[in-house]
Image (cartoon, rainbow, N blue to C red; front, side, top):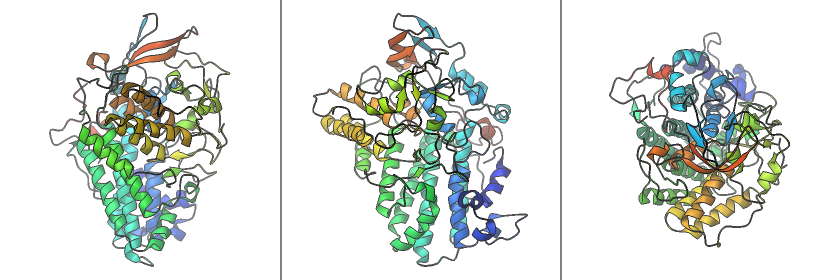
Length: 559
């Protein structure tokens, strides 16, 4: 793989211990030549390898040190997801955040049609160039960059692990590190395959490839590594050695709340949740304008099948439980892989809407049921921000409002906000809900929606037992996924698979939306035609520097 800033990654990966552990290289690594570091010469002890494995994830994978917008993978790449799902808006000019979430047109309650003169697909493609990347203006670049950096960091660790002398039960300690790498490689491939039309399979340290494969092959590779992680975990025989190594791999700051040192069984359940996610977010399950039988006539993926729903159900039945530890992140006063004030979608949305980078969308707020404490606790209406129909909002996100009794959507206080990096109980439960509904177990599915609302302290009336039809049940499900999983990098995938981001001419679109005009008129039944790319083109920094040597397209041919 050839990308801008490659040399920076080669340098950073040798010194991740400095940033994550806040100790010197000499303490963490058996230093070869500190003025000319190499992985093989400088990482040759157990503690050095653990530091490399930790930093390869949290620094190479998640800390975008160039401060493109915010300062981590969870601020800008995940911010795009929330923007394109229309849960937040933005009017900043950098990184195309002001354009990427603007629909092609909307139709107001009175029939007035407002048309975007610069449709999003044209904008995103016009800025997919190396020059635009250099100007911090190519949206397609960032997720690709972070996830392949994460993948390569894991390749480096895997290339070293068998040559390291471990203490204690050496096999169990080595397999814990291998499982760590397999898990994060599965994570990286899942992110690439769920977002880009095609990608590269790179599984050897420092070995490049120009043989592109389609996104479904990337997802298959993700599944391979998730399953390999599970198999490797099964082979561990010493729980104490496993615990000792994983305790060092996960930063101490992340071992609080729902984050912690996972048992082997907990980790396997996390894997099942991610395997289920890979199926769910990469298939079409259209639910357009209240129609569970809607179809999308032009897409880069295929409709979900009954067999798929059954596979999802099997996986999430053995997925994350309410009291399981999961992979989370917390900001720290220093040496953190994201900052409290700018490292997450939540922090960039927190504050008075006239001053925040992201602004809470009216289309987000409309998903809360009457009396939901998450709404009344986390949001206020003291200030209305007016710009255009896509940004105008009456709502602001209050900083760390709940104090823990009700789910907190955002904070700028150090350590206050809990970032869910991978799967969560809520996500798993809502997959249980949706799979059951689609398999005609509607009441069972509604019970899981209620469970998530209870888990987050919503305090709303139960929907199970109210005799809802499939269409009404799916309405509750879609609303709850948008509310409960806000800021977790899933929102665009949901809008895509439900058909909402596709052109109305192809069966897509979103209906019944709330839009406040600049004149202050509140519309409650607005039709929105987003017409976004369903899977992004490969960024020019890859496709130009590393052109395909096979026939697989690097530009989505369906748009």
